[in-house]
Amino acid sequence: MISKFWRSQGTRWALACAAAAGLYTAAVVALGFEVEGIEYPITEAALTVGTGLLLGMRLNFAYDRWWEARKLWGTLVNVSRNLAVKISAFVRPAKDEAREVATAIAGFAFALNEHLRDGASLRRVPGFEDRIEDPEHVPVWLVGRIYDRIHAWREGGLLIPQEARIIDEEARMMLDVCGACERIRNTPMPPSLAVLTRIVMGLALIVLPTVLIPRLGWWSVAASAGITFFFSVVETTASVVEHPFGTDPNQLDLDRMCAVIRDTTSEALLSVVNPQSKNSVAKK
Image (tube, one colour):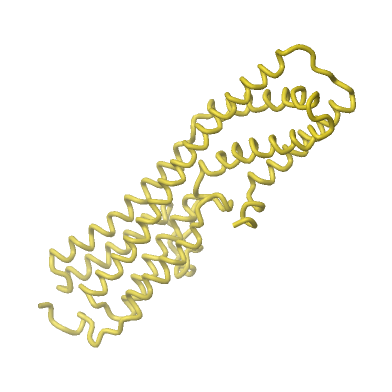
């Protein structure tokens, strides 16, 4: 947990800001700057309160986006498992068909992961490296392949209409998750909130040494750096978290969730050995 914190992009930027604040405060101390009157503490208090309120609001909005994205990917994990289990129970596919469907279900998760980051390519999806197709929207293409297989099973008498509708509901939810994730990615936070937060925070940190120096002397260098680090970590963390689909430690660990989907769907479809597939027995 601690190692992830220090590897975060927001933490590295906060350390740079803290170092700059420490140097700035040291320069002010070295120049012998003195505060006269009472206006600086009052101004600093107002700016600090304003910074705290804005940072709290910004972090809350960013976390809401992160948590919604996390719930969507949790839904995708459950939907993938349900789809694999229901196909295994209803269809009892042959081993080759089961492997094909498991690859498509897991491939959807991997493709959605890439799609939400830099754009997906079918040849980068595990199990589809040799395909010649080059669909523009890879997750939708993969769900289409699942629907093709469902249709073939129904036409071949391996699925009754009620079972087909149950499986269709799970496959449809995969597209619902994809659309909701795209909405989060394509709807950025209002830029005015981030700009206002950074302006107020910058003013507060500029005035801060003039309040600390008369009370702490050279210790104000450490105090100023520490306060700047805290404010900067909160602000930069919010800017990272509001985009939950990246690779920063503060963003969602989508690679791990893709691996979970791959393992569980493969287990549901391939680990259970059926004595006979429905391809070799009559439909009840």
